[in-house]
Every structure is written in structure tokens, then in C-alpha cells.
Length: 384
Figure 1 (cartoon, rainbow, N blue to C red):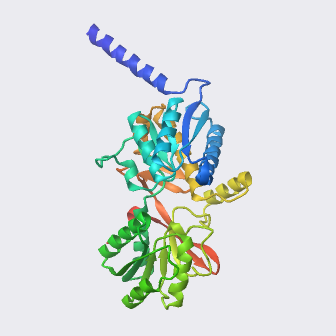
Figure 2: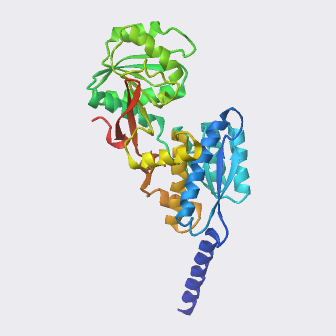
């Protein structure tokens, strides 16, 4: 009996010592790596990440810090490629961080994920939508890797549901940029969800974004007589494509993707069209208005989705560390798997693959303005 008691005391001491080592000591800040493209042509992306994260740290410190400790950010330039992403991740971990916010570009984020798993650090990406980020080469879930934005396929499913249920479309045509992983992934998800709801895909045409005339593919779409057009792509090319489609007699409702969510979108050409996106200042929520006011007061411009998701990713991390009660990546990851977080960009929890279960926004272009239509939960909109 005496021997068993000694063993229990020793185990208790080990647990206490582990907790003490994993928690920031009084006066010692919590170190968090921020990995993003801070130099070169992609530097504006890193700037948005830094701005959103800094505001999150300010708010966290105003509420008492993390586990009663301050927060220190370690910023490293990941560029937008695998090699620089790997170097940046190793650098922040080498300086004592056990948590990484980043990266932005898919290749860099994949490198960060591999380093994080190898060194038992926790990663939350504020930007990467590549479905493979949270999975290893064998398709198993990476237990220490999470993301804040929805994967691209979620947008395709929401667009399909909106076409069927809100626009009452039964026949859809897809116009996809050729050799685009982004466009193809969205179109595949749309087609699957639309077809499951007894909808029919009557045309699926790829166009070359480098071309200036698209009448060959538009001719096929017009002959197919769809009820709705789904055009996942980027604003710069969509402007010309839409203009030609309208002049060619294609007056059906059009739904786009978050590649349209750009100042480059021609609002007159896109008048009447809809598009899905992850976050919008037009949403009439108090949290969105307050965030917009605060960010503009600090930086002199409205926050984009990247700045907003960076803020939410940082506050989510701090919430999870506080909730877990210690700054141990494995304990924090376990907490995240059951978390329900209310952020600026809406509430989220995580599915079994560490992708966020959240809702997406639909906007419509009307009279030269972006109009908020609604927010639709991804996991609720699957067409029966």
C-alpha cells in the first residue's frame, strides 16, 4: 500500500512539472510564430496577416493575456513556396515558439505542416484552402494542423444549393478556367451537389484565361439552355467573359466564387450576378461593423478576408490555450477539436479533418453595389 502511494505521488509530481513547463512562467511571454510572405511581390499578403494578428494580440492582452502571460510574436518570411515555408517554420520553432500562425500560400503552408508535425508544434493557417493541408501523404489527419477558412469545395456546395433552392434552377452550365486547380475544384463540388439534388449539368466548358474572345464556349452554353451559369474564376478575366456572355444573349442568373471578391470586379458588367465568399463587410452584423471601424481607424483602409481571418486565427489560438489550461500543442489541439469559437467572420467548429464547419456568405451585385444576400451553413445546405 505504501509503495502504491509513493508511485501515485511521483506520477502527480510528473504531471505538475509537465504543466509548469508547458505554461508560460510569470513574466515570460508566450512565443507565437507568424509565418507569411513578408517580402517580395506577395508582401501585401503578409502585411494583412501581421495587421490582423497584432490587433488580436492587443485585444488578448487587454483581457489579461494568455494564461496570465503576455504574447510575443516571431515573424518570419515564408515567401510563397515550399522551401521558404520550411525554413521559416524551422526558424520560429528554433527561437522557442511551439505555435505557428500561417502560412498563406498552399506550398508554404504544406511545408509548415510537415515541420510542425515533425517537431510537435501546432499550426493554424488563416488562409490556406487546399484540402490536403490537414492530411498527410497517406490521407491521415494531421493532429496538430488546423485551418480557419473553408476549403474551396464548400463554396461549390453552397453555390449549388443556392442555385437549386433560391434560384430554383434545374439545369446548370459550368464555365471553368482551363488548367485551374481552383476553378476545377469548385466546379467539381458544384456539379456533385447540384446533381445529387436532381439537377442536371447541361454544359461544362473550359476557357483559356489568356484569350480575349470566348464565343466558342459561349456558343455551346447558349445551345444547352441552362437555367443558371456557374463561373468560378478571378475577377480580371470574369469581367470580359461576363460582358461577352451578356452580349451573346446569355441572360440567365450567374453565380461566381470568391475569386470575384476583388476591387477589380466590374460591377456594371456583373450587375445582377451572385458570388460566394468567406467574409464580407456588407454583412449587417455588429461584430463586422465594429471590426471594420477599428481596423480602418488603425490602418486607414477596410479589412479584407485575410486580415480578418488572421485576427480570428490568433484569437482562436489564444482561446484554445486558455481553455486547455497549458501551452502544450497536443493539449491545445485536443481542445480545438471540440471548440465552438465565435469570431469576427462568424462562428466555427472543426470537423474530423480539422476543416472549419462554418457558414459562407452570398453577395449580389446590384446597381453598382455589393449587396448582402445571406449567410449559409455549409453542412446544412447539402441538397437532398
